[in-house]
Length: 365
Image (cartoon, rainbow, N blue to C red; front, side, top):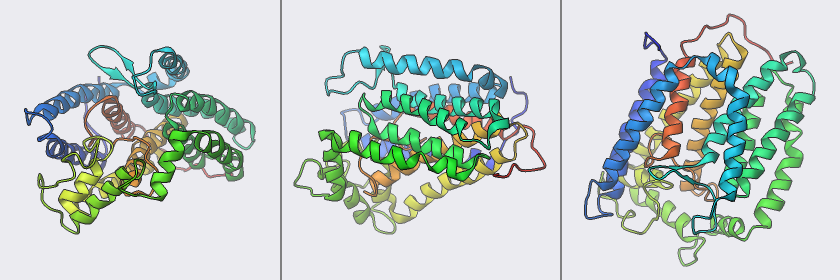
């Protein structure tokens, strides 16, 4: 166990403020949803309790544990992604969850972390060959297999997330820039062709994004999300005073909680949330790049990118800058497996912030 709670306080304070904002937002979004105004809040607090334990365990776990077991965790994740595909559908035609009775677990959430572990371990092993194209090919191929398993659930947003996450990590590594970017010339068109144009569901999401029409099924949610920000204006309608949660905007306590924040706290509240995630991004990247151990550096960058990329996807969907993908806002949205994983990420990042630092930065060759 870690004896000293020495870590990056800017990251920690930003994280705590986001959790507090989440508590207020979840209650505001759900107090009219059932006869018990505290029903969802109590469940969210319980999820926060479980997530806090997971975060403390992650903070107390030596980085050497993740390094030693990186490939094993990745293999277990692949098995879980296969298991979820052979289980019965949840009734909507999707296969994303493993129901444990008391808890529903989403393997695609673990896939994000497992991908980071694999890349960190593999790059460390091939640290003497980072001036060659081979490591990039292997990484994209392995991540591609993982992404395909996620995409057939179907969760095409998670597939795109994994590819972007991989690109960001490799871009931040000492690999040559042309090696990192060249696979995108093939991956992006293939993704659009096979997972968007050949999927009626994904194509309808794309149509809704391009034409947010409240009279159409696919354009209803994007329109209502944008309306939330228009109603909020600069200062919002007041906490608890928003009306979009009254069945106008579905899933407002999870996938569209940023729209609620925009409606009730306005531009000021929305910018505050984005600023807190920017602090986590800036401090997380800066702290990770300072680490002496290469695996620790890549791991820190990876978990930082997972947190902030999740936030970017969620915020962009809420602002209709991106098609609906079903991403929650880390630390803020109603609890579940994504909340627990977010706490694990922040625990690992805080642990990394106290690791030994180096005096000379690695430069891209």
